[in-house]
Image (tube, rainbow, N blue to C red):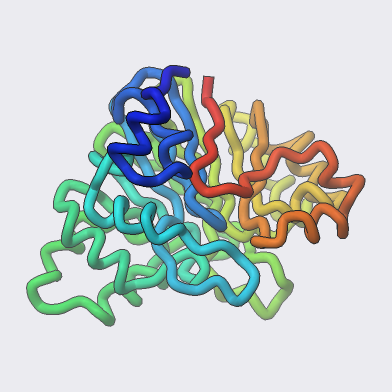
Length: 280
């Protein structure tokens, strides 16, 4: 993986967190995933650049917010956040998605598409102004029911597969449209973002044909998959991914590791905004 000299990036962006993670080009052939915060991740490979859960206003006193300098760069389209092709929203909770900043982002970036649940799209429409209505021609609303088969489609040449997997937290979260998204940046490179998926085998085993049909380069499950027995089994035996990096890690990372010392000892977790994982 190739990088600009760090000093040059610091001067260009004024942000050390970004500088350590910015590739030579927005369309460099070396694929990478850059962590924003919580479950926010930017993934790029070749000419494709996508975002997962990038704009939200809530941290519920526990999770990290996207750093303000990074958030400003996102909104204005400064490198490395220029040329975003598609934004994906796993679900419409406040620590993953907020309608106002997402709508502002779409206003600012007229070529960017959005793929989100109907619940998230409804929230966008509730705050939209009459002049914003044309934005929704760039929005793909996902409306899968709890037992619907996986959905597969292409958007601007990007392969998108969505499965509705229940949100963690039990029956009280059953109405939440939480999506596990498998996205093909090219014919060989796929990433998986799992939202707040419940780590129960009963949700994943019936979909083994879907998981096994295509190999995922990098899967990003919420970190609780690493410390639950069923979650580890799902990762090891069902999801068909080469590597797993956990997301949704609370801001107090040390406390999390102390609470689950054995299970998280060797777990790869996204914990610092701006850090990257190579897709090669």
